Amino acid sequence: MDETTEQNEAMGRAGIIAVVGRTNVGKSTLVNHLLGEKVSIVSDTVQTTRNLIRAILTEPRGQLVFLDTPGVHKAKGDMGKNLNKTARASVQGVDAVLLVLDGGHRPALEDDGWFRRITQEEGACIAVLNKRDLPGNHIEDYKKLWQEIREEKQSGKDLVWLETSALHGDGMTGLLDTLFETVPPGAPLFPEDILTDYPRKLNIADVIREKLFHRLHDELPHAIAVWVESIDEQEKKWSVEASIYVERHSQKGIVIGEKGRLLKWVREQAEKELYEMYGVRFKLKLWVKVEKNWRKNFWILKKLGYA
Image (cartoon, rainbow, N blue to C red):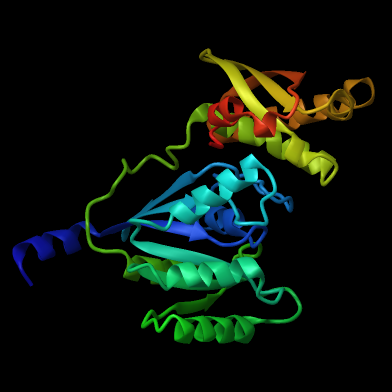
């Protein structure tokens, strides 16, 4: 072992891991559990994660930087296509790919696509069958599909297969051990006290959007976007003004709710969670604005970080 290798081993291991997979397989829940902190918003709605989020885990063994990506899905509009593009590009130049699969369902077309993409990547790949707590276990179906694609592509690529339940924490210790064994020796990539480099404005907007998702479910989540206009950071309280974009006037009334009750609930729940995140009181001012076809407006998508 040369001197450089000995120095690297002494400082631990560090690497970037792209967390990919189709939508609603539990990628954000898994990342949040591994970090022991909430970094990505979570719901059972497609397109919950709309930006590429870097979540940073630092411990005595070293540092893992997770790229929590949007879930690949059957995209219809410009925003959906941009999210798919972001997710697929995330596997380039990383130290490992963590492909999350839904153990409660058989392989879907998007899983087939990820397997094909992975055969072209040089880095290590770990396939995680998540939701193993649900009835039925389809790991053999996924392994069979992988083998068929591997043979078709004449690929010598090997996968490491693991099973987890991100919701209950099952298999997390083994997954972390495998990830630290996979990434190379090296110095931390970020300061040790940083949990994420995700911009504060986008994080606050995501918390507000998550609360809207929880109340509105599948009613109109894809028509909603949140943009933080300003943050006034005082010592004892942060005042935040944020705009909630909808596409039609009829949707504005749904978001506000009868006598403003729904919007009030969203504000109160978001203020509570932001206090827990940042350790300072929040005062949110939320405005609901109609922006017709915002999902097709390049400049709005760019401002929101979706383009």
